[in-house]
Length: 605
Image (cartoon, rainbow, N blue to C red; front, top):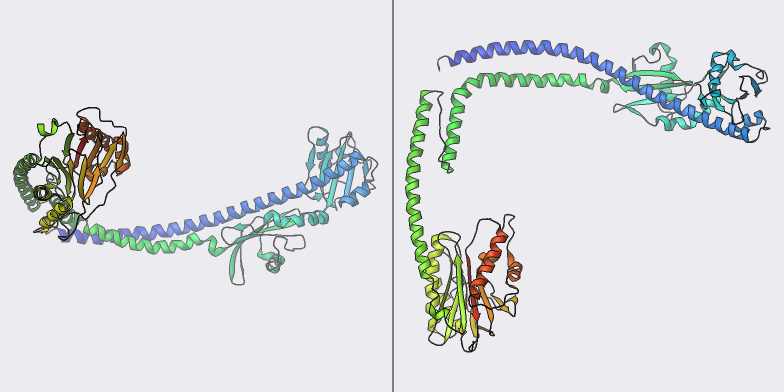
């Protein structure tokens, strides 16, 4: 197959290049011609529509202007039938006013020869007799009058309240004078495409659609050279002053409406075809290259990519990824070799995972056995009750608690949180628990005991781990608690159903600086006070939205608790745990959750 590959590539390059170039050239020539014809038709259609729209606007404005004047004259005539028509014509600046009775006879007129004229006798005048039926207003375009073929008039007719109709006519000059004031607003600077314009000239070829007459001279010159322009609504290419433009004009009410668009813009699409032709050539080259490289890609590159992707997935941990490449014998052997290697690796990992699980379970049992048990000395003492709870995020954790009685009538209780998780944190936790108990038993000053424990934990701490801790010594006779705090969360004091955080000084966390000092602080408990110690696994428990449980929710969960039962400490811890679980709503536990609750019942309880 490798021997045939150069021959196949040569054939592909030869015939694909020849065929593609032939089809490309012929197709582009035909498309260019058709596109040019299409663009000319589109320009013709565009200018025709533009002239039609502008003509419609002018016609509508002319009709509205005259009909408004006719209404005013009719209202004045109806309100004062003795008003002279010549006065009304002069007042409203119109050329002609006629009053026609219901029989179609002109009974009054500003034109001396019109009284007695039969409106039905001429096609144009007969049109106004529709006003005798349903039509109330009628406007005609500027044209020759029925009684004088040499005179141009634009007429509007209004039905009179007293019966009959009134006909008002404007001469061409009056009509253009009245309309000229509004025609700029009718068209504005209307554009055709991006840079084309619409212009309107009056009967004297004066420009009336712009504030200045800068283009007017050029328009008049083109129109004066009649052989350069075709008839109305004919598309004409005009070259003037080095500029080539498409022109089209129409005549309406004595006005010439001209729409002009530059040829360069009109034929932009055709011009751009040359650019697209060059782009198409580049695309053709790419097609040829892709066609030649197809065989190599299918038989070499794709299998290599598949092997790379599979190896990336396997090294990323997906040991279920399988390879099945059969494009060649070599790749088939590679697939089988990788699959066998992965199967062997999966067996080894499974054995190691089982061994690690067994060791973690053993470590968890050791850690649990290191925590103190609630013996009768703690459950039967009338002066206090105590309960502790811990739930690790992994098999082993870094939180721990401790409680024990001394021979001086006191109860020592503490809670701590080691940085990190897993085996390293559990090992440091065992060390910390032992050191803290040993140091507390050496001296009555709790601050000094904490400082000594800190110094010992700093020794040989090459892993740079640290511990937050809160330690208290409860005098069972007086309820006085002497305590020290090494950067731990403030305990919650519940008194008379009100929960609040204990105000205290927070000293440096343990195992950071060997010369750190720690203050001894006191808390006077009253009978039936509850004190809850906890780690940040409680307040920093998160839900699916990554929101923390927080201190506010903790106080809300503890508010209203009154110690009426012997197992109140266990109930308090359970209440907090239930509140945290409800807030997390199934989100995975990220940190160890540890709590220790102390109920001081009083000496005589």
